[in-house]
Length: 208
Image (cartoon, rainbow, N blue to C red; front, side, top):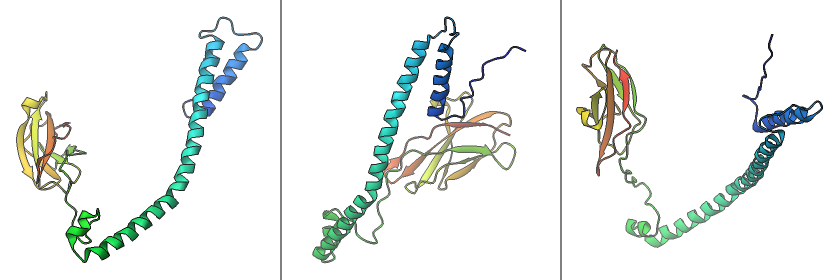
């Protein structure tokens, strides 16, 4: 039986991988030394040391980051306490006038914050529909969207091959009457108070 080398490094952490590498370098240099290795043992040792130095730097920075994160809680608590106290001063000085509160950088209690821009439709997912020739499309709910426009394209897909399919006020829809066995591409874009957002990334599915 012709034996082969097993690296066995796949599930090891970086330090353990380097330890195995360093052992191999050392053993290959012991008598009788490995003849004419390529890369050379010097090159192997240099790459080992460079990786080890970087790991040392990372671990030092991670310890510093852990210390900063422990300091974050008390500092944030102090800052938010002052934020609340200053807000109380603004509330007292406002005499209940919303415009005054807003002008001082605070929000009015009970007021509904404005919806953000409608943005791009995200997380578009296609699945087979309940009947032959149907495709189910769903995407991430967007509270800024008043409706969502859905377009489809046959394969191969280009920007010029998309055609309107439907407009829905939900975050899902069923596309019907598609040829079984064909590939269909789907994209969607939301419509909000400020107009249309960007089209989603197109997704495709083989119709069943």
